[in-house]
Length: 133
Image 1 (cartoon, rainbow, N blue to C red):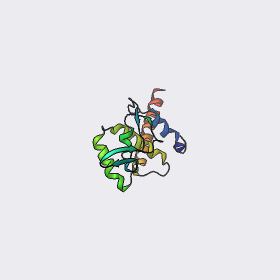
Image 2: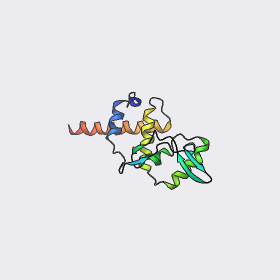
Image 3: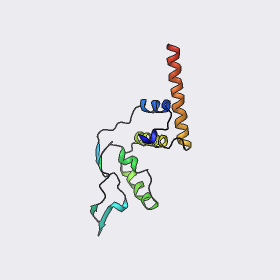
Image 4: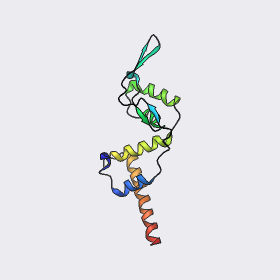
């Protein structure tokens, strides 16, 4: 992934070694469902637009997408979606961590704390290897 090319290799190693949230069943989803893509006439759904982002995604993706980059007018819609969708906090945390790493070296507080935890885990793993060798 191009966005991770600046991340130090010990951090990437620790990130890749942690378990991925359960992704199955992969679910066909719109990928960009927002108020602008839903057509309603006389209170009835008449169409859904912009299917170019659609595909089979991890079961948690649509839930995660409800907390990514929404506009003010979309905030209410996405809040309603989060109430209706099953909660996949593990998927959401995984995505937030991946996004934080993609911003490296320009990390926010969450990103820096995450990198620090991964570096500590790497140092602990190195210490275990050295003490058994």
